[in-house]
Image 1 (cartoon, rainbow, N blue to C red):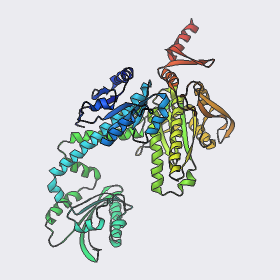
Image 2: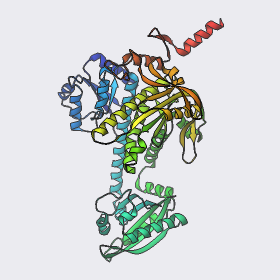
Image 3: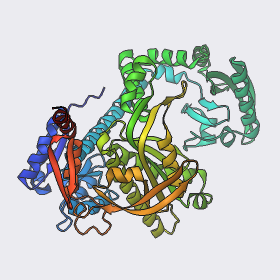
Length: 568
């Protein structure tokens, strides 16, 4: 539990009515969020502030550099402050571009739903940072309290797996031979053969396999030749998980004064054959209160679950140990696929490839979170997600198209960035279909969220015939979203295993719904978001003669009224 009391949110907003709109949206947030407002950076600095705010939301006017001056100031002072631009639709693309230069995120005037998502995400990041800082402080107190135990530790503790990969390690400061061998560089993730002489690494690898196979404690004494000197090494191997072993090494010499303490510590550690028992004993020894640790572990477990499963499934899983499959009548499924992936990736190392994929998929996940879309999984270079499970079913098609546009925009931006550096980059194609499906989890030991049904199959087949740089949709998606978006008819195509289907290419937003001076027709304006928010609120929208009519009652109430009229 973090020991910090409040999160300070600083508004740098000139106009009173704009601030009042933002201030009213804060009423739903935790009372620990304390907001203050100044018209600009200068007026705030005139108060001689002694503490940096955790979050800054600033006006953004590119012509006068308003917002960018504040960004420059805060970034010169700290990287911890979350800096958010508050912009209108005319400067939206410019604000998005600034996120590559130190801006954390952006919010749009008159769009309360995005304001809530961005501020909530910022609060979560700050609390996570505070919790990590608390954990570091706890660790420091533990280490200070247990100096005697640390002094009795062996020269070298290695946690390794059956492949000889070092998962974790600890080195005693007075271990001259070990420090000489590895220096100051971290060895986590390296192979045993990269650290130890060939004969020693081979012996260590053999004993790891021996311990994992026989599930028995192994003691081993041997000489390790390093720099033409033989060193007398005592080693113990303890199985701590199905594929993990703790290796405890000690070099013996005539002047070693810690052998008695070492044997006491080694016998204590070697008693534990199971990881759970070892962890429990160490926690009891190192921490005064188990309650705090259990609370922290529960938080970690909940966070892990939230990263694997949709929120609505987590409670059922925790309460009943399983989740019943759920059938949905109308959702939207999207597949993305990188164009040129195989050609470019074969010249990349595995590390480079994983790093580049992570850049894209992390951004795709962030976009999905904004539009209440569930990421299902990645399959190689393909990204699968679905809208309409936990969000508003009536806007599922719109949500996923907006997300697809942002994914396309990010990929194109990344491509241009890499081209300027003289590097090749992937393109992208996206395919979307809407319809019914079943969602649930599979597996018991390793659970995974997944979706099934003909809708998923059709979306996958559309992706197979789509073109790079385009968002291809089915007839269902066209009918679902055509009141707000324009499409070009591609034609009837044969989709493998699912027959003939009419396909369409997204060409932009309807006239009057995209931002002024937006030649791409893909950046929504305030009119679009008014319609979007009306749909989210359950209202019904009709389009007649190129004009939109928003009903004053919800769609459900309108249907009920019609039923009453028909029945009477």
